[in-house]
Every structure is written in structure tokens, then in C-alpha cells.
Image (cartoon, rainbow, N blue to C red; front, side, top):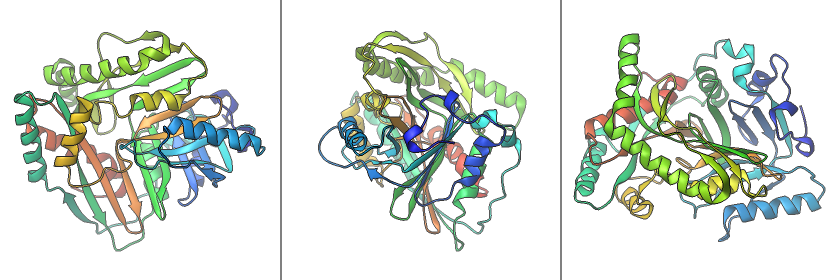
Length: 399
């Protein structure tokens, strides 16, 4: 394990002994700790040297200035960890930690196969916001507007507000999320005084290591089935769904347009593949590239793409207006990005989905669906319900 001054930029610099990655997971406690696990490494950061300031300047500029100040103060290898909101004008929750501990990926640690602790909180009071029928009506309204030619796609979200008489066991929730999908991206970071953002995202916005970048946009999905034959049928149907393939193509083109100016080479596969989580199948495309200018950071690349049509829609400005009109809540950090970046420009930023915000004895869960002209209100409502399952399972809610 290493201090923030020595934090490794590559997995090779992290501990690879058995139990190192799960040890960081076990050591997480809410408050001033920040946990992030990816398919390549595991990070647990403690303390806050400084928070990235909020002003009118672009976020990458503010982070670069924060790094400069840190280096002049003697922090030779500064990094930031935290979350960025959906609305680029809203304050980010990024901080330079006092200490950073690293290990290899959770999926490489044999101890990740051990069962997670059972959820201790029970008797949840669950309130959907909006109600499912109201959400379906919003989807129908958006479909009518798209058929009239007003816009091409919008991602509409809904929430579940969970309240318990008992105190929340956030570390146990994180354990259940991480052990259920150890090959994904699991996170828990402060989101405000007394609040924690935690989740298990399947979607890499962008990572950078040296001059190599990887992006893995997801768009187009279907719920898994407990029946193997039905599960395979659903996966095959997703690969042939004209509606989902169109939705995916829109996102891939936006990613291509955002990344091309930064790349000497950019490889975008012609057809998507499938990835699965415990609850969903997703259409997936892995985009790889070589940077034209090595000084471009992972955060700059992520900021250039954020938010993609996978979480907003297209055209971007119109989709944001529709979201403001039809969603009866502020997204906050949901559909933003969460991860880490260092002063050398390396980092990993994932899309903040399959997540919840915890505060005292309450949780707010978020889930959304991409709505296009061919969308069915009932199907999109069912899709968001399936996406809630990731977090509902982590807290022991049966629905």
C-alpha cells in the first residue's frame, strides 16, 4: 500500500497479494473515505487535503490548477477522487485525498468469492418518484414529440425513495454490490455533508493510461432472466433489436465525434457486442484510441464526452430541456461520472448509474431508460424496474 505521494498510476504498482483488494473493500467506512474498484485496480483513499473549487472555469482547468498548487506545497503525486454531476454547471465533488491505498482488481482476489454479509436493515418504506404510471405517461409524451420530429432521443429517469427505522449499513451495501459484480465498477464517495454516493456501474466513460484511451459506451438493454433458455433468448433478441441498435449507434457516433479531435488513431468496432451484469444485458462497444497529444488527461477526455446521449439524449440541448420538463427531481450526481485522475493525466471515469445516495436512514435510488420514437412506455418502465434490482438486492428489498 502507498501514500498519496507514491500512488501508482498503473496496476503493476499496486499490491497483488491474496486479500489485498478485498482488504481495501473491508476497510471502507463512510465519512471521509473514497472507494473505487474497476476491472484493473482497487482504490481506497482517506482524508481530504483539499477539495477542487467550484467556479465558472471548466472542471479540467480547475483540477489542473489544484494539482499545481499541491505540487508547490510538496505533494509530488497528487490525484483527485470523487464524482461529477450530470449538470456540468453544478458543483463537482472531487477532492485530493491525504492517503491513497491501491491493490489489484477485486476480480483477481480469490477472497472476493466469499459471501457478502446479509443486509441488516429491514422494514423499508418504498416510495416511487414519480409513480410508475406517471413515468410511463412521461415516456408516452416524449415518444409523441419524437414522432413529431422535435428530437431523436431522450433518457428519462425515475427514483425510488427508501426509508428505514434503522441506521443504514453502507459498508455492507458496498460489499454486496462489489461481490455480486466484481468485474464491474463499484464506488462509494462522499456526496455532501452526511451523504454518500454508492453504486455498481457497468459503464466505463473513459480511461487513460499513457497515450492509450479506452471508452466502453453502453446503450440498448434488456432485463436478465433466471431461466437460462429465456436469458439466452433475450440476449439474442437484443443483438437483433432495431430499436436498441439505433439507440446504440447514436451514442457511438457521439463518442466518435467527441474523441476524434484528441486521437491520432481511434478504433470503433462496426457492430456492438453484449455484456451482462447480474440483472441486465447491454449492447456494448469498446472504443480504443491513441492520443495525439500526451498531455490530454483522462478527465479532459471524459469531460469532452459528458454527458453522452446514453444518459441525456440527442440533440443534447433539446434532450436536457425535455429532462427538466418531465423528471420531477434533480438528478444531482446521477448520470454524472465518478472515478479518479492523477497529475500525470491517467485515470478512470465511469458513468454514475446503478447507484443510490444515502443519508442517515434513507436512500434514493435512480434508474433511467433511453426513449426513442419506437419505445414502449410499458417496456421502458419495466426496464427501469429491472435496473433498480441491482441496488434493491444490495439492501435486501423484495419487490
